[in-house]
Image (cartoon, rainbow over all chains, first blue to last red; front, side):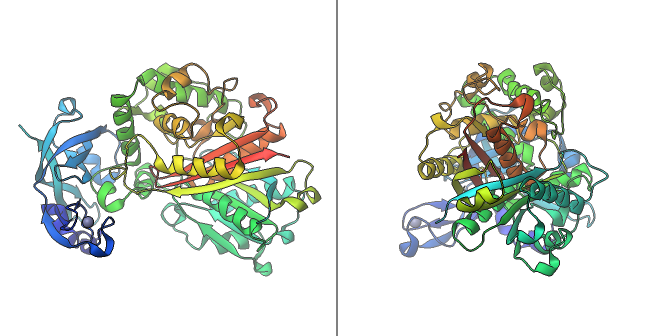
Length: 130
Length: 388
Ligand SMILES: [Zn+2]
């Protein structure tokens, strides 16, 4: 991924910055600038997610593409943030400790390294919430 | 709207075809379809070609013109259009050809699909296929394509009674069928043990739960039904063409283990064709992974949600079963050249409806269905075809 393409989404990747519709209270991640429920009556404001959530489903990836090969095996999950939206992210944990329904919180981690450019990408992973 | 018929079909063998280029593959499939329809190239009015990622796989874009040119039709200047919807590219190309004929805009239209996947390293093909998911919010986070389907499997097995062995039986059944299909990439039968002892890819999915990397091409020719007898004694009528979309990310779906786009496309197709699942004699479903076939059988309405594991174990989806699924061997055993798969499914159904499917023939089959999925369910195409 090019530096600009990554950099453009840094507030979202680093800080889980999304949006919220003040009219209906719905949260959006990644951010939307238009509420599909309220349409023209929607009022969208920035919202920083608390960063806590629950594991909906998961897998342990053993065969990855080049950028992620050095991490295998790693846990990938769909996490439902407490405010509602779901996201796909890695879980920093032992594979055999992962369960559906497990509570997790966000952590700032290295996500991948671009082989050719050598650029290291950071972003959000999750860790088990004690 | 005019009724549409299939007047010719052709397909290359599927596999790791080191000796064949992208151009070789589609020229071969196209020639086979023309021969089948006893048609010469200059009768073709338009072409649609399904192709997912020639840009990444062979660094070639502008596929519409390329195909028309290599097919020897450059001087005829026919409209030739590439259609892309990841693994559903072929199904959508078929639908575009049907629409062109049904509308009255064109008469003789070729729908083709082609993918040349083995000219890049396996790691690069894995990454290219990840482009069928959301690059920013799935791929970048570490998702692979098998990984996304593995998360469907984890969710499904948590909620419904599906055993690891039942899941393996999907691959066993598809290899049994593939062993009876001369174009299939894998022609050998396997056992549950073969699946359970294969390399882990993304838990709980192992190598033999996954469709392979494949080179191949397929083509079908459609025409107005009223003209079909000019070309063939065995025209196959297109009873319905339906397409649906959903969120591109798996995590934004209403339900992780249900492809709502499959349900939407199936409902539309049954309504247009005025048939129900009971009228369908065989179905080619999109089994890019074993779990995908489990979900497809249910979402197409052939058994209730959560019941597909037992349904498969009971043999209901096998050649002699209640609803034979993937008589071609499916994506698993026949192979999955992504852009060609949707057209190959039509090729298989047409062979079955003409009674030309040899050792895997479903006796007396009169109506068949195809189900082609893009990504994890962001696009679905469903077609129903029948004998006249
Ligand atoms: Zn709203």
